[in-house]
Length: 86
Image (tube, rainbow, N blue to C red; front, side, top):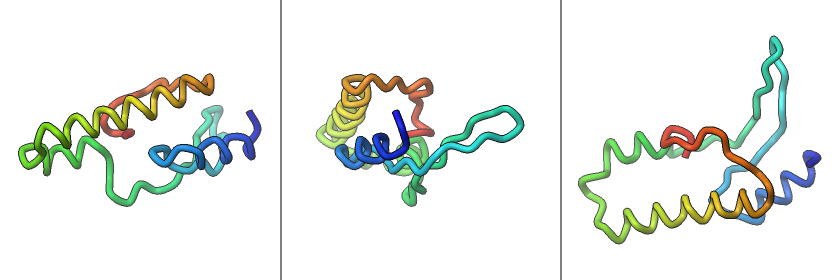
């Protein structure tokens, strides 16, 4: 996929942050992504988990599942699906 294809793809799904490009440093590739101003899921849950009802918890799980399904449908595999990158 070229950069423009990826940008169009990301704009189709609101739960995926914007992809800006790829850099290479010392043999490692790094993706440049939109800043997640509200932090990651792990930090959010540390603060808010006890305040969340089951409806909110299930909604969040569904949104994550929908995002992953969308990626897989478009032949993109997320290698590191953990709460600090959600």
